[in-house]
Image (tube, rainbow, N blue to C red; front, side, top):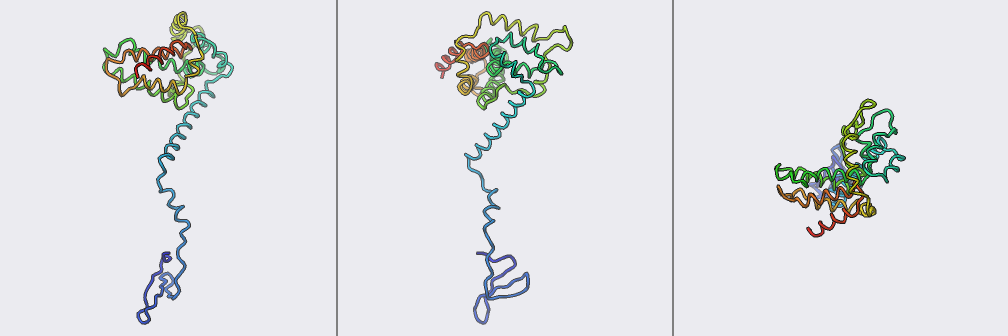
Length: 274
């Protein structure tokens, strides 16, 4: 092995023998000093060795899982109410909106967007998000507003990613989650009670829970894949994709109203298109 630091190997001129100079102590010896220990070298260099692609992917996925768990826990701890959530699972959208406005689980503050999102549950909250981004294209607005199809297709793709990684509700910034939706004073009105709840009640006269097991059965990875195929932001054409937007809107309504028939129609269109 190599000589210790400060040592030098030389040849004696008269005898031709090799001797060693210790410059640290200014001494010489015929005996070769012990080599430098190498045991710690691999450990010192271990951090500089690039990880394998599989390890890098696993590390990134661990970061994503941590974010997902943190966000789900944040919603559950701040806005969740197990008792109200259990009751809301079997209620239609209009009833869930009324429950959120009347919820007294957090008396220290008015009902907020986060309360609505949590009380709606996985299917209803993601369904409304999907429907909200698909509806403008479904009614043909992308023909009149250049760039709208791409602008709305990209969020739909991001929603598909959120579903795939395991978010229990759509991701929203904290300031939106904390925005109040209840009136600031008793007897007041809000857009939820005066507009959204009546609209939901009117729609529920036509759309009802049918074959509700289908949305529940296909509401995670299969749904994420289907939504990713439908959104396809990189392949969206201006003024086009009208039927795709309608299918996405139908898919969203199927989730919101737990309508398995609408789910089947959406899957049928995708299978025929791709």
